[in-house]
Length: 215
Ligand code: AMP
Image 1 (cartoon, rainbow, N blue to C red):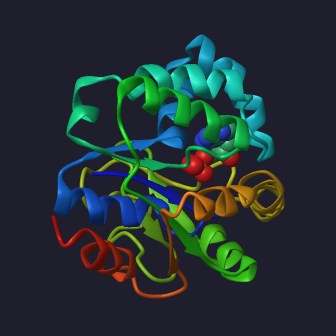
Image 2: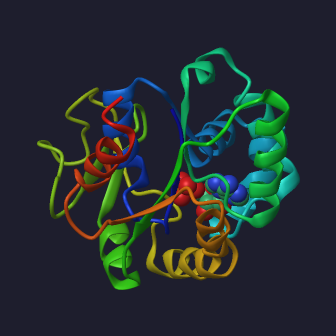
């Protein structure tokens, strides 16, 4: 199964991805995670990407497309994949189409996670993540048992640099201007499904089970 999760920051793409991956055993590929790992490791890509990420802007298409061309051809992606945070521009969507054509692959579904801006701001300003294993917490809904310590691995639980209100608002504007047009792009291809991401975490899994027959 090959799926794209499309939605604003804070729509719950990462959480939904973990849910889906657990059921269908496909590769979860998050461009944000790959970029953050590169920033942490100080690679050339990480150095080039950092300033865009810190400001809540998009990393230039050519860097993202090159990164994804190689990632999608790694072994684990053969069993299927779930793209989280990619594509984010029409240039990226067209490049993905070209790559999939060359590889003889097709997308099964694009899932739009729909959520209002004020819900996103509330969610993201209270989001915390483990700097080691990436486990996601929330200061209100799901705090770690011991303050700032990850329940799973004991790593430090921190706030992402781009989860401050000013940067979140910028990321939302970028989403509406550059990424939201992809909703129409995939609707026209007949593979778009929309899930309300305001509440239940199981909504996306249920939607996929219905349309893909639980396979
Ligand atoms: P995310 O974890 O998906 O919210 O991504 C964090 C940041 O990484 C974004 O705000 C962008 O700066 C950058 N980023 C992630 N994916 C992409 C992409 N497909 N295109 C451009 N920039 C991206």
